[in-house]
Length: 263
Image (cartoon, rainbow, N blue to C red):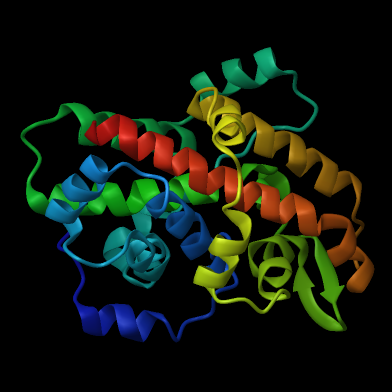
């Protein structure tokens, strides 16, 4: 395992471009904060043994910050999984099961299993696995992290966002979330209003089913944008509720995963 980076490295990394961060800084923290508010007291205590008194949201972006450290280059592929568009649920499951061991889906399963079943993990391993899992569940709910390999999950689909040159991946990573101008705690409080029955419905299914939900959203996003499109208020209006739904799903499902691991 690679040694945990120090606080100075983390602070320095905050100054780096966030264009490749899934959900951006705010979105990942929203997902983590919703999860924090929906895990059991027992899970809270067990997580505290691993990460200390900091909230889960503090560590939600760690796997993005370490991208500037060449020692972690091997983990770049943990943030996404790409398969062709137009697959049925059954075809998608087959493709995912036959996919690389180093993508978002396979590594997510690995971290879940290790944290739950491997009693020989060191504290450092528990920390790193937990940070990655928190982040990966967030990534899994940003639809374009379940995109197409040929355009790097929309990174090569160039568009304008309020006359700023960017790409459709970045629009979904951060532009749509940050357009609301909420802090992550404000946004999580606004979104985390599902009744118990609604939350349980959202939490149904397995990790692969949740990723397939995002895959279907990705297909819709691709169908609704063309190269060099000029996006602004209308695009935000059309996609605001989708973004917020994905953030809420990510948070509630992360809570379910953590409760299952630490029960």
